[in-house]
Image (tube, rainbow, N blue to C red; front, side, top):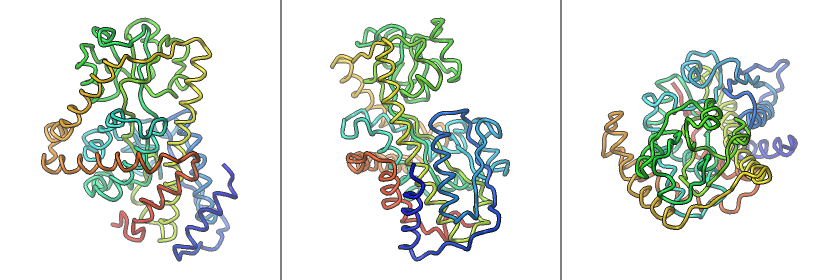
Length: 387
C-alpha cells in the first residue's frame, strides 16, 4: 500500500474530526502484536496495520508483529487479557463460552448463500455487518471482551466456503455417506442434513486426511488451497456449496489495560488503524481466493458446479437453520432466548444492508473508508471501553 496515501487519508480524518497529533516522540513505544499465522494474508494485513498505527500516532507508537511465536490461536484470548501481547489476532471460535454473543452473529454467515448481491465480495459485506453488530448494536459483545480484559477494534472475515473433495460432488446423492471436515456447528448441521458425517479435525491435519482418504471432503475458503498446500491433494472443488464464511474473531483485539493507558488522540488513532486492518485482511483474503482458484484450475483441479436441485435444497436448509441459531445459543450458552432472537434479527438486517453497501468496492482503502464512515466514526472514542 502507498504509505503516503494512507498517511494523507488518516491525517485528513484526524483533521476533520478536530483532533491533533501529539508532538513527535524521541522514541516510539512498542506494542506487541501476536498473530497466530506463520505467513499469508493475516500477516500481510498486520503489516498494513503496523504502518497505520505508526503514522496515525505520529510515530509515538510502533507495532512489532510476532507471527506464530508469542501466542498461538488457543492461547490468544488469555494471552491478550494477561498482557503477554498488547494486541492479538483473536479467533473467538476457540473460546466459544467466552464470546457467545459475538459468535452468534458469526454463525449466521450462511445467509450470504441465499442470494448473489455480494457475489465475490461476501467477506466485505460480512466484515461490515460484524463490525456494526459488535461495535454499535451489541453491548453484550463488548462486555464479553471486557470480561476477558480486552478491547475489540477490528474484524476477522474470510471469503466464502466451498467443498474441497476427492470425488466430484454435484448432486444430493453425491454427498450422502461422505466424511466431511467441518468448521463449526452450522456446517455440521448442513452435512447431517444431506446424509453425510461431519468430522472435527484441526486445520493442519486436513492435507494428510484428504490424501489418505480419512475424509472425503473439507469445507474451506479458497486461500487454504495454498496456505495449507491443499492444492497438492484436492481433486475437485465446488464453490457453490455450502456457503458461509469464518467471521468469529477480532483481528486487532487490544489488552484493556494498554487501551486505557492511551490518551484520547491515541484511542482515536487505534480505532482508525482497526478500520484499516479490517479492510485489508478482508480484501486481501478475497484477492488470494481469486488467485488460488485460478491456480487450482491451471493445475488441472476440477472446478465444478452443483446442480440446481442441490443448490435449492441447500438454500431451503439454510433458511430453516438460521431460525434455530438463537435457540442454539440460548440452549448452549444460556443467552436469553428473546434477546438472542432480537440480536439475530439485527444481524440479519445488517447482512442485507452491507451486501448493498459493498457492491461497488474494488479497493482496500475505499473499503477502510466505508467501514470508518459507516461504523467507527460513530463511536465516542473518549468513552469507548473506558474503565
